[in-house]
Length: 222
Image (cartoon, rainbow, N blue to C red; front, side, top):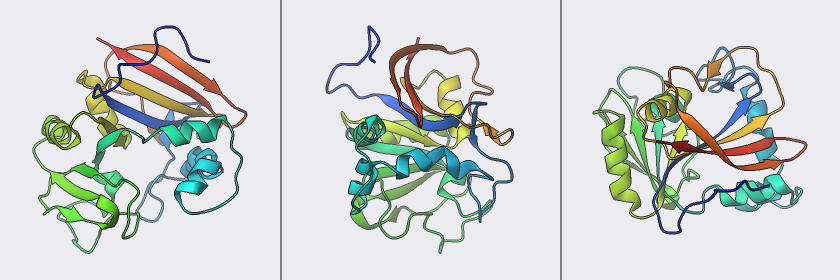
C-alpha cells in the first residue's frame, strides 16, 4: 500500500539509499573478508532479489515469478544518474590500491553510470564496459556528493553502501529517502545500518509486503 503524502515531483533530483536489512538491523553478516565480502549469512539478505523475474530479465535470464518483489526491483534503478559507495563495497582490501582489482562485478558492472568510491588512497578513474566509470574520491563524502550531483544532472543519486557510507550521509542530513527491504531473518551479528546516525526523523511513505520481504520507503524529514 502507499501511505498518504508519498512520492516526489518528477524531474526532481533526490539522494536515496535502498538496502536489504535483517530483522535485527544488520546489512552484512559477521566475519567479512575478501572471500566473503558481506559476511557469514549476508547473501541471504539478497536472495529475494535473485529470485525475481525482473532481476533475471536484467541479466538475460528467463523464469522467476513476476511478484510484488519483482515490481519493486524493476523500479529501483530507473532514474539513477550516479552512485556513491565506500571502498569496502568496491573491494580490493585496505591500504594503497592494487590496480589489478576492478571490483566484484567483472568487465561490465551493473551500474552503467558514474560511480564515486570513497577512499583514502588516490587512484585514476576506471572506465568499464556498459558506461560504468569508477571515480575514486579522497576528500570526503561531501565532495563525493558534489561530484555525483554534477554527473547525475536531474537524475537521482543512490548511496549504494556499505553501512558506514550510508551512516555518514544520514547523520549529515544529506539523505532524502531511505528504502529498507526488511528480510525476515536474524543474523545475530555483523554490520548494523542504523548506528551512529543521530536522531533522524523517518516518515514512512510507502509499504509493500510479500512473503519474502517487506519494503518500507522512508522520507528523511528535515
